[in-house]
Length: 104
Image 1 (cartoon, rainbow, N blue to C red):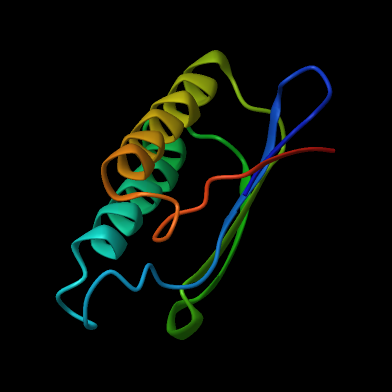
Image 2: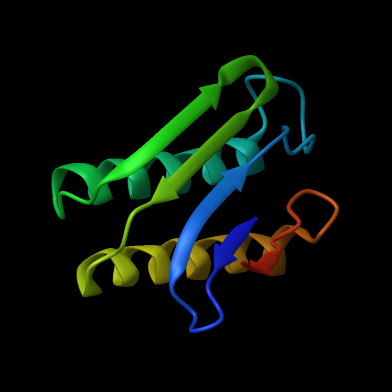
């Protein structure tokens, strides 16, 4: 879930669950989603130095990332994440990834 203000500013993103495309350790959809999300969070932190609050529960496949206020570079990284996730939905379908947006 991508949470945005009524002005389209990114506030938070959450991921929960596993894709279920294949058995654990062989699920390329789950691995792709995880890679995109974790790389985006790492890039927001290490390259752009965004202030974030991150909560994870690895067994449940849960990541919650709350942003203070993203810079233009941070917004670009989030746009890139969404593009990658939309491509996964396009290639594999909503059965394995449901990308939702919510205004807060």
